[in-house]
Length: 124
Image (cartoon, rainbow, N blue to C red; front, side):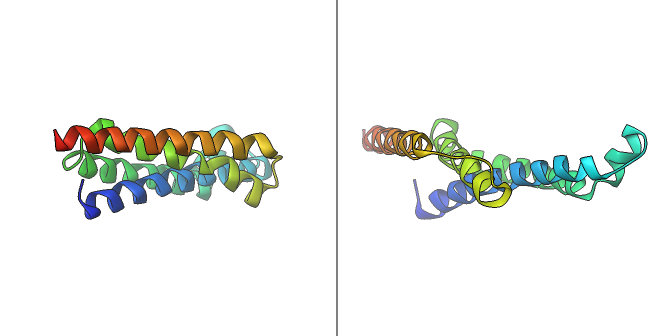
């Protein structure tokens, strides 16, 4: 894997938590809106932003998969998904305890093992 490919995958892994944060902002905003559901959906700007963000990240993911094997690229998305609870704690004041840190460290350890395996396979 080239440095450029690793950076692309890392960028994608950071884009996923941004999308989840936009969806949570949309859910919070939805409670403040009034009117029929359809009106609430089309006037919820964070929701529209979340859909646009996911559209762009889907194109980004497609581009990455033209360069990187799925089994390698997907490992990065798993590492990024662990950031969602941290962002929820920081932005939305959702509860978080030590188990998150332990679980995330285990995930990152698994990430390291998988990447070492991918590196060994690439060397033959």
